Image (cartoon, rainbow, N blue to C red; front, top):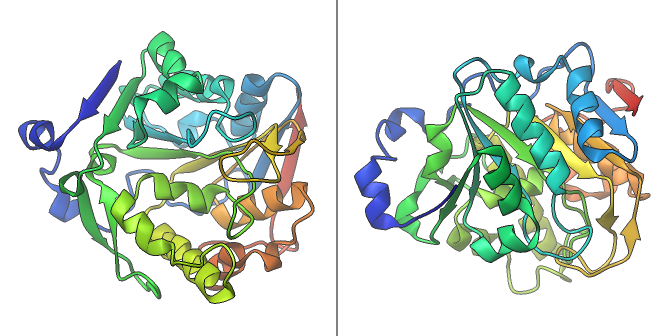
Length: 310
């Protein structure tokens, strides 16, 4: 079911009720950094991408480790473009919806302010329809976003987060890793810009954000700060087939590791994904600063990785 929500609907449904108490908190069950079963990064490898996603999550203790019975779950896939390797695969989203249902979720919704056409072109609307998941598409109206304090923010003192996020108990962050025009990398941390207000997102991008080192560093720090305010319970990354040039929209050169990467530590997961295409985590500013500022670690002596072939 698709629901496009504007200012009037937002007020009518009371989406902001109780939001003041919720601001700045982690959603229930989402500590954003615990090590599940002693594993930091779980990787499903194989041609069946839905099964690979399931095996990766199973290695972390299964979806019940993250979704309690009766929970309302928000999913955040990447639907930025329709070109191959630029959006989260439908079969991965389908698998996660089903696993949430099996874990006892009362509601599973994809949240977005991207146009419905993006969801149609990527095949993700069809998945939501077929699986009975909600597709909540919000207008780019600042009234639908709420100011959230950023603890320890360096570039941001507050973020403006989609208010509907706070109506859910659990967030499953579902990016595709890929190239980016400015910082050269998209992963779990950058994907959370999909919950940030478009107007706020624009402040992340200074005039020369693609070329000027200071402007790139500003973008990266804004991403890190945003991640201090929003903490997913689980990250499930499409690293099956992704663009390594001409990102984030493509079309671009495709790399096909055929992996689905899952974990709670965003820094560790992003570092693993960056390594899939020859990037050093310490050279990606958002990963390095995320580690330095307490979001996680990419220290190979501390990160436990488990790969499962399907």
